[in-house]
Amino acid sequence: MYQLDWNLEELTPHQKTIADYVQKNIHALLYTTESEIAEQLSLSNATVSRFWKTVGYENFKDFKNHLKEQTEISPANKLENILKQVESNEMQNKLLAQSLQHLQETLLYFSSETFQQAIDLLSNSNNIYIYSPGPSEGLANLIQFRLSRFGLSIHLMPKSGHEIFETLVHMTNNDTILIFGFVQLHPETKVILDHSKTIGCKSIVITDRLISDFNTNADIVLYASRGELWEFHSMVAPTFLIENLIIAVGMQKKEHSIAKLEELNELRRKYKDILPR
Image (cartoon, rainbow, N blue to C red; front, side):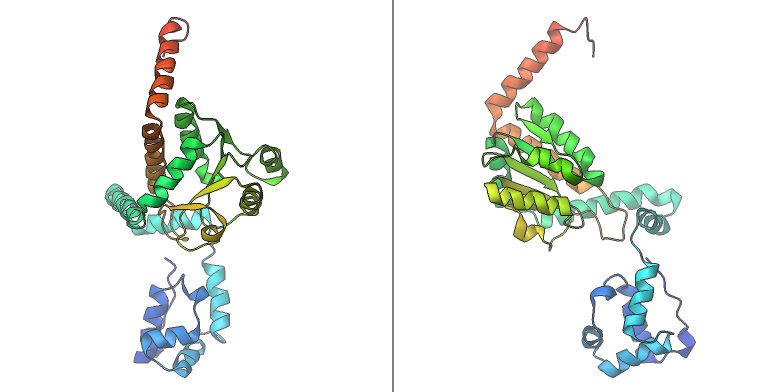
C-alpha cells in the first residue's frame, strides 16, 4: 500500500480525519469526488477542498495526478506490495490466509444456476474455443487437457492481433467461447464477444471483476477472486473454479467421459513397452 508522507503536527483534527480516510482508501480516491469524501466524514465541502493545499497540493485534481504517478499498477509494485505485508518467516501462513479469503469470496458470489448453465453449454457444444491472454494461459492449458480427455473438441485461440480472425471465421452458433477476462475488457475480447453475438455463439467469461463490461457483453459470467488491482494476483480461486467446471462436465457426460478414459488406458497398456510412463 502506498504510504503518503503526512506532517501531522500541522494538521487540524478535521484534517487528520481526512488524512486518515485518504490513507485507508488510497486506491479508491482516483474515482472519488470531494463531495463523497465530505459526506463520508460528515464534513463540509469547503473543509475538504482546503485540505489539499494544506498538505502541499494545488487542489484535489493535483493530488490525484500525484497519486496516479506514484501508484502506477505494474507487476513489480504488485509484488512489492505483497512483500511489504509479510515477513519471510510468516509468508506461507499469510499467503494461505489470503488464498482462503479468495476462495471464500468466490463462493460468496457463486451462483449454482449460472454455473449449471455454463456446464450445459460446455457439455453440448460442437466446439469450445478458449481465449486466455496473459497469466490465464496456464488455466486454458489445464482445461484443454482435461476436457479433451472426455472427447470434447477444444481450441486455444491466439492471444492478440489479427490472428484471432483465423479462429473467429470457423466459429458457429453451435459452439461456445470461454474467455478469461481478468481486470479489463481487452480490444481482442471485445471483438470476440461482438462476433459471438453476431453469429449466435454463446460466451462464458471467467473474471475477477464483479462490475465490468463483461456483465453486459457475455452470456454467462463466473466470478473468481484474485485480489485488488494493486495486489499480487492469486490464481488459486480461478484454478478452483476451473477444476469444478472440469469435474462437473465429466459428471454430466459421465458415460461418454468414462468410455474415452478407458480408451486412453487401453492405448497406454498397448504401447507401454514402447512409450513407458
